[in-house]
Length: 251
Image (tube, rainbow, N blue to C red):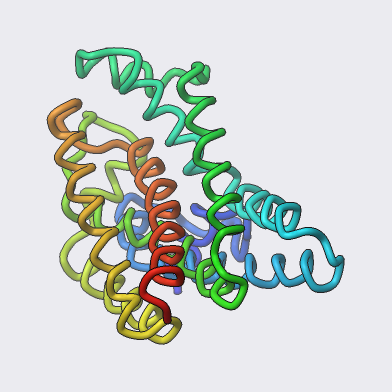
């Protein structure tokens, strides 16, 4: 329960115990609950989407835009910030030290802003393209698998900096955390969309492996910002996968 509370309060603005003791080991061990937090976020998104579309009778575009806004509000834009910093760093320099320096700069560059516009636009648009009967499943799996992607990256990646908050997550995340979080993710996915959903549980790890390999070449490992970017890109991949499954394969 201690790890769950730490994960909930770190990944979202939801608070259960504001005075909970947070140690490096506690932060690391909370990673196992990341997909669970994603599942909670997904349930909230489903409720919000139904409220906007069924109760307020808003257009699909407006409902999707507000639903994505709810996710941003719930997470305080944590992973979006990481995405913007990552894109700024990777597009603004070639040397490792310079890239890492730009990532830590509090100012957001043009490329960072454009990446935010693109990622949020894709979420809204892909949600609109998914058939209505599969939208709830997509809303739940999107944040769930996005945070599962973070667990995979923490387990398989090495930290690129000498110090930083994300170091605790990467140092303390092992095979146990990866296996248990994977079992939970696969179980929820199978319950929602059956065996065809296993395609998503293959796509996300494959993307993470490619992403980690690229980061090792560029900066020698992963950082907190790149973990955030990993989450955001994984969420979009889930929506693309759901769209493909509903349009091409069929549930």
